[in-house]
Image (tube, rainbow, N blue to C red):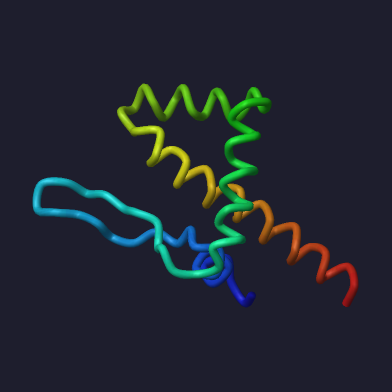
Amino acid sequence: MHSEGSLAKLGGVAPLEASSRRTDKHRLNRGGDRQANRALHVVAVVRLRYCPRTRAYLQRRTEQGLAKRDILRCLKRYILREAHAAIIKDLALTA
């Protein structure tokens, strides 16, 4: 994985433009590894249940008018960013 974007595409959480003239929206790319996407989904749901910081994020984004589906999309991408940073850090330590 040379970049966070390529890992997102592999995990099926890379955003795709899904806008019309009046709205500016994104959706998840349905390509990529479905098992990786399912793992990210499980992590996101568990964090929403148990992590106070993630619950605060859900509350803040709900107040901004986002649907829960869109919030999960953003949360999956955030989790993937954290995982990518950990992988890069681990690779740097072993090299």
